[in-house]
Amino acid sequence: MTEIDDAYFEPKSVSESLFKDKGSKHFGYVFPIHSADEIELHLNQLKKTHHNARHVCYAWSLGIENIETKYSDDGEPHNSAGPPIMGQIQSYNLSNTLIAVVRYFGGTKLGVGGLIHAYKTAAKEAIENGKILTKYKTITLRLFFSYELMSDVMRISKMEGVEVLSQKFTTDCLLDISVRLKYYSSILENLTKLHPIKFKEI
Image (cartoon, rainbow, N blue to C red; front, side, top):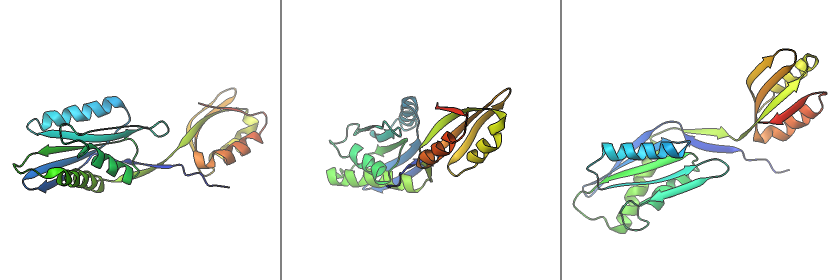
């Protein structure tokens, strides 16, 4: 049976870099993102902060299952900035990540090859200057059960790959759990053995 690879990687926080070449300065920024609004906010802030910069080039990857991606050369020669930045996102297998590189022109043209190297290096160093988190794909289940099943349900909730999100014990019991995708089939098998428990994905 093939083991499920449910891991993905995200930056923990904002990280930065500075790469210089022939007088040009390339400021790299890595941002964790979880919405399109955050992307726009970060890019607008960078443009305000670096209002004298020649270019603010970027690439981003958003989502875990339905992944959206985009990159921009922002006026640099075609594919000399955005794709090299995107290449680093893909090289480090990052999700929910925006990388922007701000360029101040130093007076000497770098050429397309030089630009590709500069944008790639600024992005790479910004990633390496930060910390990458390993996360796991999960499924959330809501369990409905009677008090008689409490000990059995709590035993399952302590199994590997399970996290209790919330619980409510009144006339009957309600428990929300997050199950790591890798262990989902096993947890489901254990739950179906309990009667008369009810559960659903939420």
